[in-house]
Image (cartoon, rainbow, N blue to C red; front, side, top):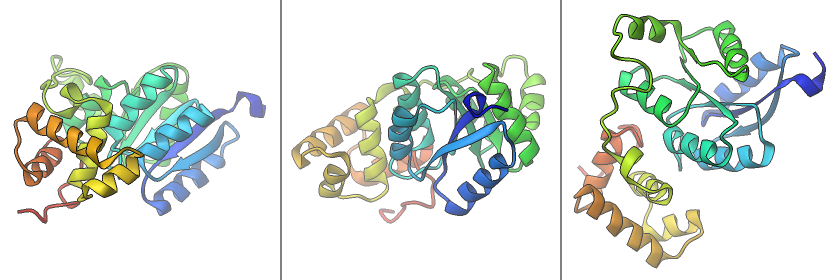
Length: 228
C-alpha cells in the first residue's frame, strides 16, 4: 500500500511495554503507520492536534487525563478523528460512556492482535467496531446498546474540561501548586476550580473528591486511597 494511503495511528497508553508491543504489531502491516505515542491523556490530546492521525488507540486508565476526557477533548477539536478504545475494563458503563463521548469502537485487551488490526481498519472506514464478546452481550439485550443507558451523572456531564482535569489531578494526590504547574494556571485559579467542583458535586473535602473520581472511573481505585 502506498504510504500516502496508510492508516495513520496514534497510540495512547501509559505502559511502555504495551505501546511497544502495539507498535511492533501494527508495523508488521504495510497498511498502518504509527505516527506517535502518548503516555498520558493530555499528551494524547496535544499529539492528536499536532499529528492529526486517522485513528487513536486509546486506553482508559491514563494519568493526568483519563481516556474518557481525552477522547472528549480530541473529538471536540478534531471530530473527524476516530478513537478506538483498548482497555482492560469490560463493564457496560465504561463501554456506554466511551461511546457517548464519541469513541468509534471498544476492544478489551484480551482480544488478539488480529482483532485489533481488523478493528482499526473498520473504524478508519467510518464503521464502528466492538469486541465480539461485547457485541454478543449487547445483542442479547436490545435495549442495552453501546452509547445507551448512561446515568447522566458525574464528570462526564456536569464538569467543564478544565474541571475534569483538576479533578483527576487532585484525586491522583497532587497539591494545588502541582496542579497549577501541570496545567499552566495560577494556584488561585486551581483553588477556584476546586471550589466549583465541590459545589457542583456537593462534596466538601479532598477525600470525597477522590472517592467520586474512583466511583466514576476518572481514576482507578489503586491510584489514590491514602485519604481513607
